Amino acid sequence: MSEQADPQRPEEAEATPQLTDSERNAAQTLFGDRLALAERYVEHLCTTGIEHGLLGPREVPRMWSRHVLNCAVLGTVLEAGVNVADVGSGAGLPGLAVAIARPDIEMTLIEPMERRVDWLSAVIADLGLDNVQVIRARAEEVTDEVMADVVTARAVSALKKLIPLTVPLLDDDGQLLLLKGRSAGEEIEAASKVIKKQRLRTPEVLVLGADLLEEPTTVVRVRRR
Image: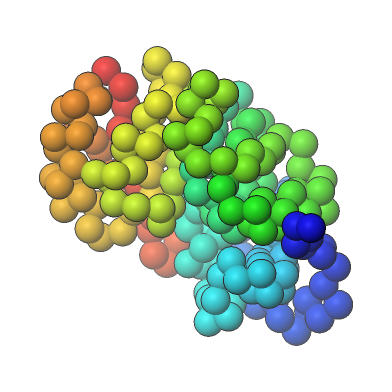
């Protein structure tokens, strides 16, 4: 029997970090009238998410700044109505954070691990999100099923390995939006042969949220030719 995630959190008030003034300003800007949903998502991350091993307990104090806001800002570069596929969703980062911030897009979470899929499904049901679906599979197993305008990923693997996994999920005019850190430039250089082989445009490094977040988000955008 698969392990089911319990959306009930009797001790959530003690476990959930409070938003600082700067974080609240960013959260209100990114989530708008869906901020309450984002707060409930953070409650899940800090309780059942920790219990199920999706994140470590040390991440709780920085759950907003390092994780949820860091991912939600990706929604600022998405066009209305796009179909997004998030590879290796894990705790729903960035997929769920973006889906909450942007109810006008359709999100598909692709995650191979059953216990993570169970947790994601429980959270989606609890939040009442109607623009998200979860597929239990590896990216390479759903190339015939998923054709997205945008493919996202965070903390999955280096670009050299990640690009061949994600490009087959793209529509002809699609783009990859891959969250990376300070090593983005080095990863792009290391992946140059893969990028050429896949016939992709020269990658762009985007810095998102510089005027909103204490630590902006670095994203590598790769478009098809």
